[in-house]
Length: 423
Image (cartoon, rainbow, N blue to C red; front, side, top):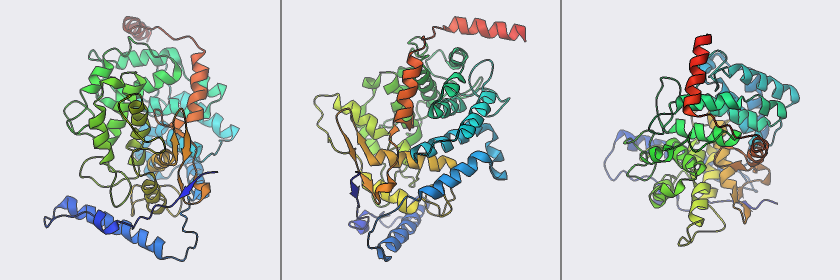
């Protein structure tokens, strides 16, 4: 039975509000505007006749929103034509968190579509006939792993996927997002994530990658997209998760990262911001919140560090209250902040962050902290991959029974040249 809790969002509300100290800026005005909208929602909830005082996750509305999106999307989504595997992953993973299984027809349809996104030379494009790109490759692999059938696993061409990763690998150990494309920390994370899940990881393929990632840790403690830039929640998750998957987390300045991460939770709203001095956003519930299970595991490996054995190092109840009260759209789907519309991206990452906040899970203990009605509980998410733990375990067991491929950079280049000659 889940432990239900209610964090009183107004117990310290006034002193937690932003203080512009007599200096008004565009940033301070926006922050106070968001706080007013959040406060109005909190006050309405507290003052409404509701004896149980239990925020409820509108599960059925979100399921209908996601299921409808898997079938067809409005015209406005044409701008995301190069992100179609992402749309599939966001919807499939959100349904997974809501403990909803796809029908056989739905699963087969998704597998067939993603097969058409996979290129003969390896990797997945943003849609059928589009160039391979590491971002939709990560999304497609995750979606197939969540489906988790033999047909879904077999859809991934592991040999060609490894060849594609070699083509994206740079001399300094980083990864391009696509051929001729940008080099940033997302590439390193997407590459090592799919490599670990599908058992095509080799030390040679990721030589120097950890050292390149460490060049992205900023003076603030978080990670930037490329060396020398500003620390950012999404990039920080990619950096820490990639280092952990590379078994190179000891290179990270963990105390600096922890200090930066804990200061990203907004004191009044309860949600997370993505960067210093920015606004709260529901998606950072995972990009920032997902850091803490990884950090907790790393810190417990250091004998000198004494940390809690019952909760993550952020206010789990406050985050859930923000998400349940301020980020659910009345027609289904979840949002960035009050006043915004729903989309599949925010629905996915908001639910992922809520799952992290609900489940304190280590090798020794699993303690639940579910705010509101017990039915709010979500499936446990794997913090390194952002798929369900069961999906990650099943995929790892399946692919680890297959041989590790040993394609080298020279082999990959030769194969690529032969393919061009044949073409």
